[in-house]
Image (cartoon, rainbow, N blue to C red):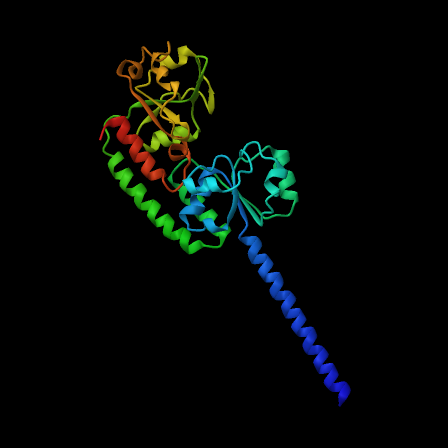
Length: 289
């Protein structure tokens, strides 16, 4: 009888220990799932829009919206990541926009066995919706993601209805930078061209692909009617106004009419929850209210 009771007691203690260890493992797993590093401005913005920002422990340099994100540690620029910097915050998951690099750094991060989720990038309405859904799935909040998709789709519907009434599309030149008179501009298959099209306009530089230096002759031939540039971090006081006196610009329709539009970079080209609003705002700036 004594041995029987002792065996039952031992079995009970073993079972209790197993359940304690199992519960601890679950708690650790849940805690790790709430230790997320977000890489890519639009990914971080989506996480905030989903109401899941409490799970973030760090962000990358491009994650500048909403302003609260600045309170998070910065693990570096998305294209120049350091494995040490990313892994030093002990992440339980890394969610990154497509194109993180350099490749060798990403390979090291992936080899750490931390769950690594890459979000595809597309420069259109469908791409924004797919991005929200992908982030929602990674976080396990598909219902919240669908609610956000419904809201963003409503914004797109509103903007597209208004933009659809614009007159003949204007030709827009998007200038990424102007260093020492050398203009770096947007050709086809770029985020800038995607936004230009969503705003009901045309990219003036369809003769080249990607973001590249462009000659004065090419700009003069393109004859843009509007110049669009980014305000970096919302800075209005830059020397970019001088672009209208650039030898290649001054004689174009945009130069003659002094048509220069500047907007926040992440808002304009982030392809996140605010993209429908950004497209409408850009269209209104191009064509007037």
